[in-house]
Length: 454
Image (cartoon, rainbow, N blue to C red; front, side, top):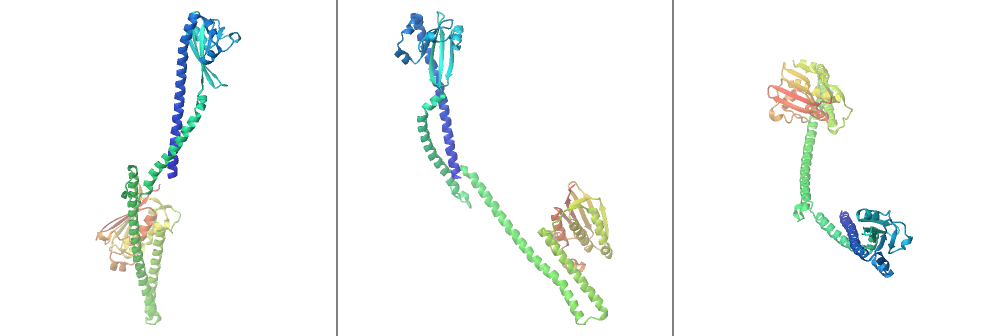
């Protein structure tokens, strides 16, 4: 960065110098041109008086030396355009000057002027003509260098000045670049306000402070998130161990009794049934654990497709009709057909777990309502029951893995304690929101709001 600042300052200095020199050269050239024109016009007055008083013969008396020193060319032209006298050439050898611009203007208006450029000599010739009382035209001509020739004549001193400017520009660029970069390099990133700096660096210091605060905040959040995940992991491990241990202990106990021959022959079928039930519970638990792990890790990634929520609800009601009948619970499906974009298997599991919980934690002869509606920006799936309800202080934790509000009642109704956790992770996978409303002793209503992709 220091090199870029140095080169930038040096380039600006050189460009400014070249621009100033160019402007000065143009102004100088214009001044010299105007001054030369004024001199020739002033001299023309003197020569006209001489010719008017002494006649054109006086011009012929100029000596060669005087001609050289005069630095002007005098030409006396008759009204018909023929040259009567010329201070530089033999008048008889010159062509008719009647068509010259300055001569035509002088014959018509009294005075005339023109400028002609010599490409070979690199000079401008300024001609000023005055009509005399005799009808003749006296023309005075003077030469001056072009801008390029003037530039070449001034090139040597300009190169010397440029050398001095380059040296000064280098010194200035070094000092400015050091003055800009050193305070920046000296900033303490941990505490940028600790050092004195020029005002232009205050916004940078403020931004560094703000970024430090944001980084510190993010680090705290990451640490808290890490601790939270670590706590959940430990809780999950403990819960899984406990949940797996219970059916395995039952299976092991029943099997030990059968192996030891301590079970009566008429009770063998009942014991085998209990072993089967505990094994099924174990399979269900392992399946739920695997499903949650897949949803958390993103391993359930499959192509999403349109899913009719109302049709899913109707299928789930058929599958749970036996469980609902055993508890005398009615399941009612209502609403309108609505399609969401999702994974059919995951949505099926979400609806199943919501309905299964609504049946298990319902009262005898209770009711479960499944309603599908379309709102302005979402598709709503609502599962409402007339069950025991959830205490307000427990509602924020019911979606945690293995969390049970009433552990003794949960053991009676069965289940793995992972149903609502699967619902939460499935909703997150589909970008859906979950709303929970519950009153103790009155029932619970859970709404899942899917994004409307239509």
